[in-house]
Image 1 (cartoon, rainbow, N blue to C red):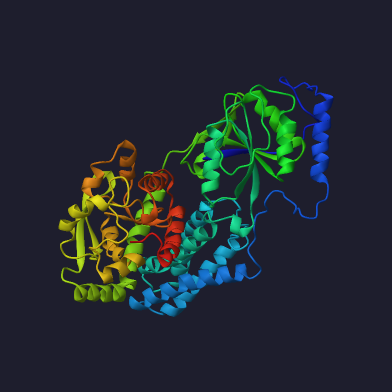
Image 2: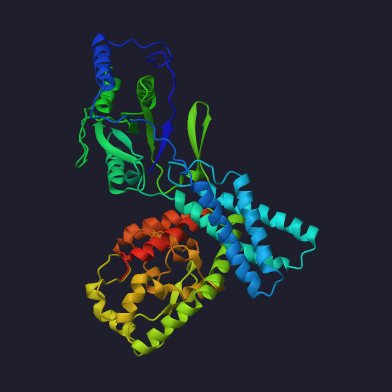
Length: 519
């Protein structure tokens, strides 16, 4: 679901079809004036409602952010340079860390206003640009000082600093519950079914936005199926003089600061334009619902042509620089992950081997990008003959679609249950990422029998590489229905970016710690 917000305009009064002043009845003028007077009267119980200001970093934010960048680059850089027997690793890491923090500060990364809107991909992408500038500066210093440090090792050493900075930036700006942070816009929905019903259902079912539906004004005779939403009046099927006053009545009565219009055959063109004039004259913001769904805002560019408002949709990323960066980050992240987690992997392998009969690893054929099969690795979490027992349990499958899931699967071992809850059983898939079969972020790879039952829509999940984590991981995992899982995967397939991947990796840590939906 998307919407186009129309900026406030300063008009002298209501305007007709061709721009001439449009007469209004005395009753309509009196009604609007009375409602406006009621709205502007001081009320002890009412807090001021208005546009939501962008948040700023707290006073200690710039220092903390700069320190995080400095240590996030200098620490891993020293470790890698030291392990690579490079000369003066501490001095080299300290210089690189100070350059990194200074560069980020000079480019305004610590004083930028945080966007109140969901997203923030530009900030994490900016970290990549900063990192490339850092590489250039280090190359100049390396040449000028005739440093003995190996250039290739130096580039690898400062890569974790980029990953940490981009992940922190993306996590800070990733969509979260705006209602819990006090950045709510009170919305009055105006429209006709089914567009208004769909908008209300989506706004009420999710909290990763700052729009709270407070009331609705249906258009025409059809009744809206809006459970729990108050009706603040009705608009006639045909344009009427009291359209503006009816909508303003709902705005004032429910303290709304935004009118969201779901256009339809009875509410479009000149009628919508007149409604916009009337709302903007009284300082009320207006947004118009778009029929687009599953398209990230960054891919939409509004333009005007011949008096029409056009929305240009950028195609999904399938190649180019971001795909190259994603591949490099996948391989680099998998390598560092395997090295850093080696002690944990060894301990888990021993616990799996000693706790139950069977191999340490479970190898399974999965379908990858473009439906190509590959062998996926996991720690074994079930009894040795789990695949043979699966057919007997098919009648108690707890999810719809081609997946098989059970909350209390009797095949899972006690150690396996703990590994599943913490998602540690998935860590051997870092080998698959390193080999190029998978990505760090993407849809989960299906089994061959699952993929064989895909329809055309579901088959689109295989357009990109499957991932170790993804939107499913941070949105409920096994608690999601099959259709919800597919919808999340399709959103990712069409809207992924390097910045979004960074945010998902950061959010995965919280989802794994929480453990909900993992079984």
